[in-house]
View: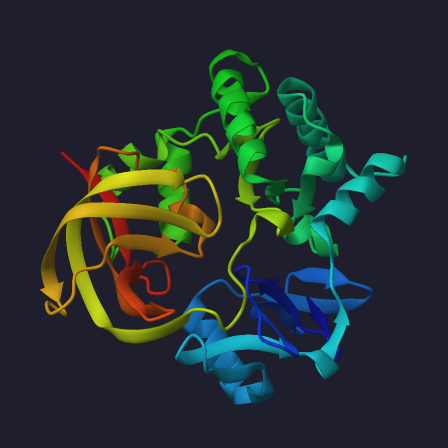
Length: 327
């Protein structure tokens, strides 16, 4: 989402309030920035708390209290929206044009290989990240979107095979993982050995033609059954739990979800036991499978709908949050 102030936001989640898009700041004009677009320099910001601090100081209109979520969020009001950049449209545009730089060429090559091997139409894919809005550099990542729950499973299977048999696809080395670990600022959340063990099982991230690639899978609009306001959420503090994954049907999707049983509260709010762990961060996909035991730390929420109530743990909004398998 590009705003009238020249800011660029990542759209988050599947549900948005009337007159506003839930989205988090990613690029902003800065004379010392390393990204150049239309003659203007931009800086990139990754840390969530840093994004909030910058908005509070310079653009507070993009912070608001969401009644349904029960907390402050970042979001773009309708009258501040300049352009919604579509990953699907970007992919189609790059497929049509002959004038592509090397990174754009490799991004489309990646999409074409996944489309061919999975037997899915190219419309099932999109190009996101810095490539989407023209902020990419020669060493930038290739960020690909896959649309549809069933489509994500087919692409997952194809990538597993490609990483084992194709000359262009490679799993991360220990050195690659160390850089990723530091870049994500996970030193307070998880030890590097545990992080590396988890990431090496994943296929939605790795190397393609020498570039880092990241795949994120989202539901198609027709697959989304919840509507904004039908369910209300209430933050209840932080806690750490352990439990066994009983349903991993949405482990490949962003947002991802893991249903749990045999839950134990290890730290924090002990009066309620969450029945599921969810995350709006793509790095928590492929994190655990049905039948595995996990430990998770995050924000406990009450989930209320039509007179029923359950509790969930949301991970990924603090550098201390964790979701990991344990033996």
